[in-house]
Length: 315
Image 1 (spheres, rainbow, N blue to C red):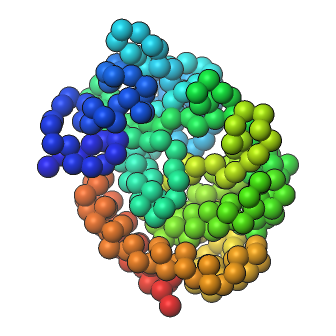
Image 2 (cartoon, helix red, strand yellow):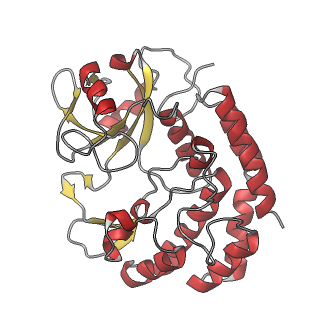
Image 3 (cartoon, rainbow, N blue to C red):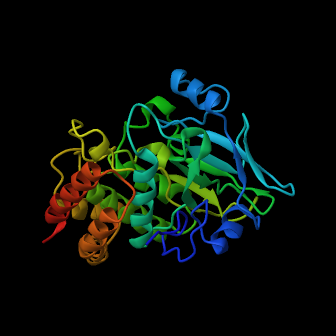
């Protein structure tokens, strides 16, 4: 039985776009599923030109800024400025990145991690291949919310996003977040989860603080975004985390997370509880992986990685 490409629940009534009708309005703000005006020529050009000019958004994956026009027939069109949506199509460099990102983000949600709105859709200009779409969270209800990543908050250049530690991220939170204890706990859970699913790309630009309301001057840890199992995509990469934890990026052990928690002010009992939460979700993660849209070999690789990482996290 098919599942909705947005919420992931059973789709009892088949349709051409693969979404529940009830999921379209919250995501797009329209009753009808929008037409996607992304030409094959533009996608081919992006594949050739891996720069951040024109329609691309900074980042490792190819990312396109999309504007949703409010017409009789809603339409998503490419624009060269930050707007409501970001689309990540298939690439020639790595297979099935959209399917993987959707899966890992769904796993994060199952863990209790707040994520940006995200979904899959089929791209006509890529022979109906899956593309990953996400909704910007710094533009909401006519407001433009201040949102700063940890590179910016720590005064670092973009090229230094892999230089640093999660302990340093804790200091950024302690300096700027309105509810420090909550934000530190949220960050800790994301790092444990990332280790469990092989996401070694949670660098300084993949954590941000965002305003609670425009000009509120109250900042919280933003919803999670850009989560992939990079250790499956690039199995030759020996690093298990993007930044150091307890001075390490490799050979991470459960005790490293406990020491890290103590360093940033999280009590042992709370840290243990969050680690155990991830451990108990092992079978859930594996089931989600089996039911995902990824190719079978990627499923097997991710399932094996999760088994190994959860074994490390277990007492």
